[in-house]
Length: 320
Image (cartoon, rainbow, N blue to C red; front, side):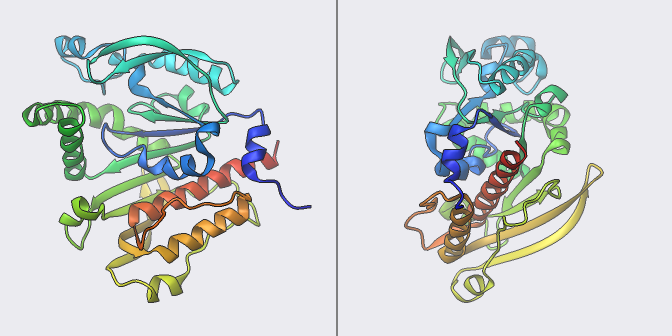
């Protein structure tokens, strides 16, 4: 009997599948779950931004001399309660933080969809949060990359002056190291981002970076679910610089496999990976990177993560 379209299977299931993405502000957290959003769409996916769970507005944080990275500036206990309710399919009254004003808007009723993504500073901060997350990710750009991104975002999109952003960066760093960075230990996958060995300007020009995907070994696997890279496409259909490397490492006492990708690869590589996911999920068509002759390391890692998240969700469906 042919398998059902996996989107239909998820839609019919009562299970709320949760994905937790942690990392510093402006680190690119949303980017690496974009593949899942593209495949399953707004009908099946809902997202909570943890900034909504700040307990202090911008002026209050300034008065108390703490940043949003400090747990004291956040209602983590309320987030825990809401996550438990949402996992059960129960709507919650979610707070709402306004980045433009630095204050709170009226709360809103939030109804979970079949895939719930949590993104923020403290997503993996407590045992309770980690217990109710099915897949966890930590995004960890190198400092210079992260700072450059934050300056660009906060000046262009949020109206801050460059001096104000630089001041905030300096103030945030000790609390980042104390409260945010240790969450890497609990992630199923950690993404590192650095400037490309082929030239720093490529980051701004074409979004080309060196991306490292560090992953724990899968605890569960399904025999007929696989993902393979076509070496022919990689080696013969590209005219731009790229490199692939795999190494093992130990992070916080855990053995990890690190896939290091740099540069740009032919679109044929990604198209074959997309076809593989189509075959495994019966979701058609999957075309995340349309009208592109080349894809970046970040694009490829996004697709690999997408496959792994789907793999986890398929496994959970098979044991129900």
